[in-house]
Image (cartoon, rainbow, N blue to C red):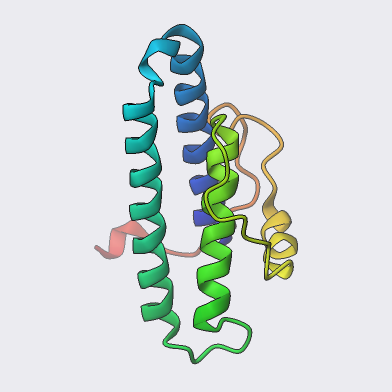
Amino acid sequence: IRFIQRDEITHLLLFQNMINSVRKERADLFNKRNVDKIYEMFETAGSLEIDWGKYITDNQIMGFTDDIIEEYIHYLVDQRLLAIGLEKRYGAKHPIKWVDDFSKFNDQKSNFFESKVTNYSKGSLSFDDF
């Protein structure tokens, strides 16, 4: 999960930087109509993540109630909107702080593509068996 999360952060930063670069170079594209579309896309993405989170946990994991999942996803949507220079949509608070501590275990301090991976452990899988 931590490796997936780290890779997702890499994608997040990549697209955040792309959007911010376009915003600098082509501010005219960030008109009301297009910004409304951006908000709509973020709301749709958030809704899909909430549905998936509720489905995958089935309200059966201590500390992950449906309400907490919804609040957390709304918090993440707000953070993503701020990162690209837009206003928060939900005003949600961070309901599960321990997630941040969990994710810091594998903080990537350098560019993912230029650094040497040291967090993966070498397994004993032999491709000769295939």
